[in-house]
Length: 133
Image (cartoon, rainbow, N blue to C red):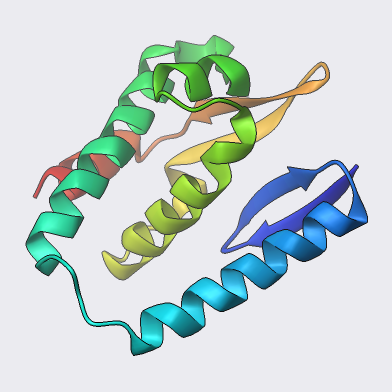
């Protein structure tokens, strides 16, 4: 198992080749984003993203102290695997940091057996309020 750390989010890959592909993909996306013209207004892009990020945080908050396994969280968000959570949380972390809120005070990901679990932290309600604004 290989891990790629992206904006404070650990993304697990099954092989070194998959980790390299992910890194290349992210680098290519960033280059393309730097040169691309916006397809939608910032408010349109932000509102859809913020709704998905808010749903993720609401699900984590509702799980309580037991946390929420990554597979259940991914399924609730319509993702095929928990690996799909990485890009969502990376973007959410950037958004939270831009609003002066440290992601590590909002949620935590830690192992529950063989799987990663998601746990709410003390500032999750503040994050939900910021994403709704």
